[in-house]
Image 1 (cartoon, rainbow, N blue to C red):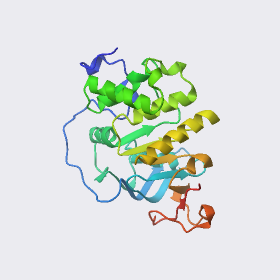
Image 2 (cartoon, helix red, strand yellow):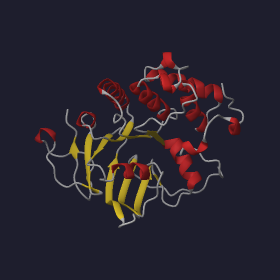
Image 3 (spheres, rainbow, N blue to C red):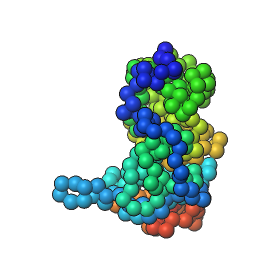
Length: 281
């Protein structure tokens, strides 16, 4: 197994992992903002294209409370993935503010953003983004090591997370021999390695068959029941149905109107630029 003593020797491409930086690791003052786990105000993002600028986000407001499960839905190109990247500090907005766990991301440099992600964000990708030349245990333990745990504690944490996602008996397996559902469960275990404040998932069932989707849905239900805060992008109504709230994005804005499931009044956190619908049951 790889050595935790010398980071430079780890069999790992640093560029793959946006949660780690080899730059200055000293702390800098960070602006604080009161409120929920996630607070977004007036978020705007425009990308420059050859023909014309693409306005991905046009003033999005959103709040996610502690222990809440919010699903983002909308057509392709509506700004869902762009929003997740801004929440995780993987991109920078043109305007507006993102606050995660009471801290504003405005003005943070790359190293500070990497620290924020390691401490507060567990990101689950649609296509897993696992390290293929490492075992399941090493994939999860690596995330814990980058989060500051020593090797033995990191391995203990990794084993606990693998047990949580029912992969304890696959700890020595390489990702390439796992099924799609198992690979995404492994990715979820990695996302939980540092006990994140917020799990951010971008289409976590998009590359899975029905059986794999059912496995991830059950895990998300259990995590939510245990108090995990989750922000998830999905096109699948079955996935959105297990969330507390469903937020619809259209053309870079929170969509106005909409009839909540069951015809009940809309609940949850009000959003200035539109309305939200409680998830169906």
